[in-house]
Image 1: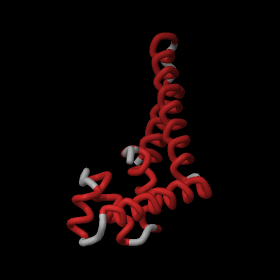
Image 2: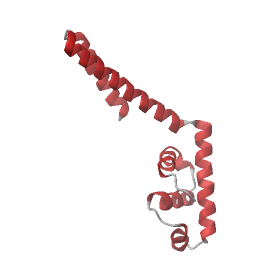
Image 3: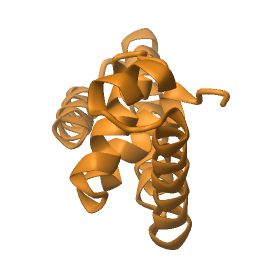
Image 4: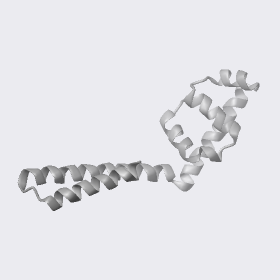
Length: 121
């Protein structure tokens, strides 16, 4: 099984509580603790195939929830948009410093940066 750490960890953040406790544990052992299927099976007292099936089922559920709800995708879009807004604010600030130093423009840039930082938390 190929591991897609980043995607699964993001989906776990959004939808992990919707999995059963066992599914969540197996996924966390496999992706976060980097245990092999055999190690998880030995620790849990089940077969390697049982662990694999549980992980595959949990992955499928995570992907299905994202497909239906799209929370992780939307979160990434918002995060990307905030980065772009921050970049534009920096450009406005730099232009203002080079050309005319409008206090109003400078104050607006500071407010934009504060709002972006609050929304990013």
